Image 1 (cartoon, rainbow, N blue to C red):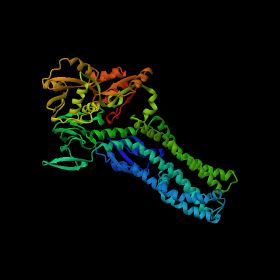
Image 2: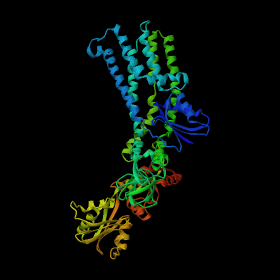
Image 3: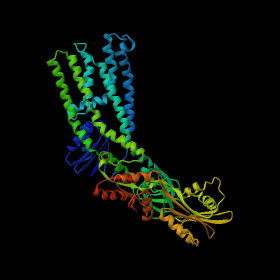
Image 4: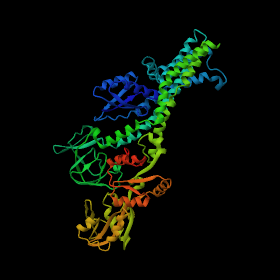
Length: 619
């Protein structure tokens, strides 16, 4: 069984290494992977491993378990980065309030030309100001660090904790023996460390930004039918079999199947397809997609971790838990680095004391320098932080990185697969072709009728018409999946596809070739008719982005194999591919099948996938 554990308190590679070591010791635990950036551990457990065993192992390593998520159970999906950032921010403000006076007192001679405090008062004041910095604001660091000395799970906190406490104690020793007081310096060391931790917490917080966006897509409340009465309840209280009421413009709360009503649903955030999908009784719907026109009654078929959105979130989280090859090397180094530095620091103290004539205080100061300067936080955090920040920047530019390993292995790529909608195309419908004797009249009629619809095709036609004032439309009617019709100034007009024209017995004679030509270019064809007479044909399509042809041409020139994958039919897909310059096409591929297609292509070499929506993340 797969398990995800949310852990509080990890902030360096040694921390994650200690957690991994402790969990790996448990019998029945395998495939342990700990990510310090996301604060999660991913592992597999046998039947003999209990939740308490896992919590104890992590506690022994010196950390707190926030939540243990077993496979198949609904996760609370807490996002704790904001709280962690706030905690470090409070500590940051606190330590600097005491550190600034320390710095002014210590360096007053250089700053003001005279000492503000006599040497007799210097050490007592340094001890007073440094105490809250080290033992109040730095308490968690000390607690974590010194635990390593009796559990033998050392971390970067062990170096900082030992270094600052020993440096602080030299202040008291200076009253009884000839030892240089480093009490003030100890406070500044902890302040610099806490400042670094705040910066790291901010950087790590970016790793969960995409998860937050996914979570925000979900609906918080749902309207449930109970004994014929509509009741609004929190989404967490929705049960399997409940019937939900979804009105036009509302998000569908959770995965289910339509049991009453007809409508079209905007699934672009899931599938990337720009056209809404018609839904009738028995049609499946996905949570977080938007109902467009009619009222739907949806019977809940999946809840919690079984929903489409929850599975996508899980896939992205697991991807964040993977480690790139270079990161594994860094982890191995940090595993032995802390104990090695502790030994070197001790040998340094003894060597300076035995082989030189320096004072004990000077020897202590040099040993502390080794502890503090050698702290390799950057070594353990450089790779994961750079990966998360890099992937964050990529996400802003429309590039979703499935695994961190992809960044390092990108040089091996031979095949690049492109999603169509929103990636190669603009992701929104535009009028791309027109055939009519009187275009002005065509768009005046079509724009006036379509103004009453919220369909993407309607919006495209209205935009193209350029109308700002619209005539009154009487007897307006939407013919589901076919078009719409209405009466303007006493005349009946229809705008729709061939099915609507056939149903109204309107002859397409003289327009068949143009309709076929538009459709061969991948366009959705809308016929405009006045009574039984056709005024013209409008071709609407999701047009290519301005730079798509150039980008594909550059990749083809460099020898990459380019492939397009889409849910569109073969004709539409081939038309777009030919226009952009892609020779290989995978059409009619459902969102959930994209991953399998990518796996097939990987058999011939390294594959890069370029997509723009949630459903593209697993692929």
